[in-house]
Amino acid sequence: MLSIWNHGTDRLPRRRVLQAGGAGLLGLSLPKVLAAEEVTTEAIAKAKSVIFLFLFGGPSQHETFDLKPNAPDKIRGQFSPITSRTPGLHICEKLHRLASISDKFAVLRTLSHAYNDHSGGGHYLQTGQRWQIPVGGGFNATPKDWPSMGSVVDYIQQQKYGAPTDLPNYAVVPNSLGRIQTYSVQLVRPGEYAGWLGRGYDPVTTRIEKRDKKDNPYFRTCTDEELTFQLDGLLSPQEITLDRMHRRQSLLSQFDAERSRIDSARSLSEYDRFQQRALNLVTSQKTREAFDITREPAALRERYGRHLFGQSTLLARRLVEAGVRFVTVHWDCPDGYSWDSHSHANDVANNLLPGFDQSASALLEDLSQRGLLDETLVIACGEMGRTPNVNRSGGRDHWSTLFPVLMAGAGVRGGIAYGESDKDGAYPATTPIRPEDLAGTIYQAMGIDPHVRLPDIQGRPVPILEDANPVTDIFG
Image 1: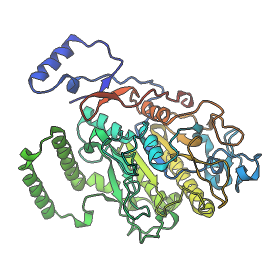
Image 2: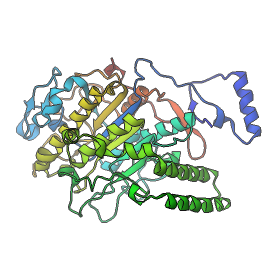
Image 3: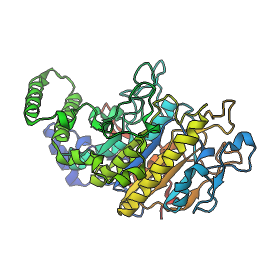
Image 4: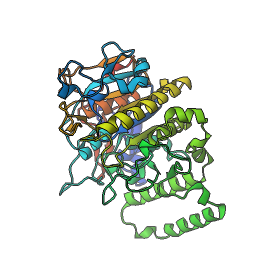
């Protein structure tokens, strides 16, 4: 049943209304059967898939794509700019691979918002909606959160074509955000989930373990024994036998007998989707092959980097090539800091920037060589930037007022720097780009009207974005 509403639709064909009325006799409501045509700009809607490289913690604009070489030392920092293929774009010397292929991507330099914290910013960047901080504060996702872009894509895909029979529409790798961070309790960071849209549209998430509490697999070579990319909540392929599958299906049948104890029809619907998705995933040869990065040539795996981010980015390419529509790759903070570099300048120089440079450049070149870049939208950014001034520890603190985003593929014009910051790299000097504008740009590139309405937990139609202004100028 479709329940996608376009708020711009004023009139409906008589036949559709009669069909809706007839459906109502069968227990379906009008909002459940009406569907709006997706309003898109044909020149923009080219993305079959999205790869979202989310650098959680907040990379500095001064140390990536918006260097200020003429600013005072306390602002300029330790790195020097290098030339790129993009006129007027100062790129950090630690991003030399990306500088050499800057004709393949655009840099938007004026992202800005008011959530100067990781949870609020992380939710905002992945949903395009402001986070309602839970009562008493906190860092974790809640069922009242707005759905992520990936979850919205999954919902719309399922309303059109039904539940996927093997590969998911939306995946998160290598872990759910916060799962391997160094805290006394495991965090469930907001932003990547379906929230009020329902758990049936949460991402399929992989699971990679740390060696110990102090381990940072983003900073070292990972072995194939570690890189299992096991689907979270499911058995590994080695543990699944035909007999065990039959017994698991029998167990699921027993759960079916308890349906009468479930009061909420929506909860039942989500339960059904989880059940079917789990069975589809663990029995699908296509799924197992897509998640198996050992099928890739050793030289290509080295090109991406044998660290966790590199291998996860390679997995994202495998997934979109197989048909997954939205893949988020998290560069998390297993050491508690990483991109949140308050006092870890050496990590920025030795691990973070070189690792990102290696993997992101490999992804763009790999997609291009395979003919996939024209239909795959690539986004790379954090949830905030860093302060213009270097602090006493040699690092930079939170600064959400200005930060850049890299965008490539699916019609994005390469070799452009969009927007200008002020002389200190503190505030936008041209029109700020808000997270809802970025989300609207991504939706439009995928052929989804950013003004589409979806049913909330009470079944009321609500817009997926509020007042979004997609950045159409970057598309050719």
